[in-house]
Length: 44
Image 1 (cartoon, rainbow, N blue to C red):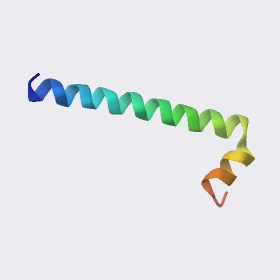
Image 2 (image 1 turned 90 degrees about the horizontal axis):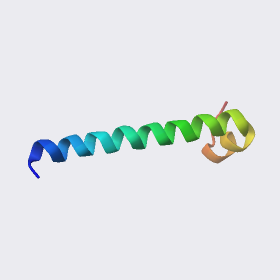
Image 3 (image 1 turned 135 degrees about the vertical axis):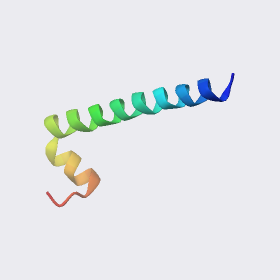
């Protein structure tokens, strides 16, 4: 594998990771707002 393909694979992995984490957090906030706020100690 050359450097360009390694960078592209890493970029795709980070996009997928970001989408999964953001989706999980968003669904958690919608379904369990009190629990999510207490888990992250958010001052909301």
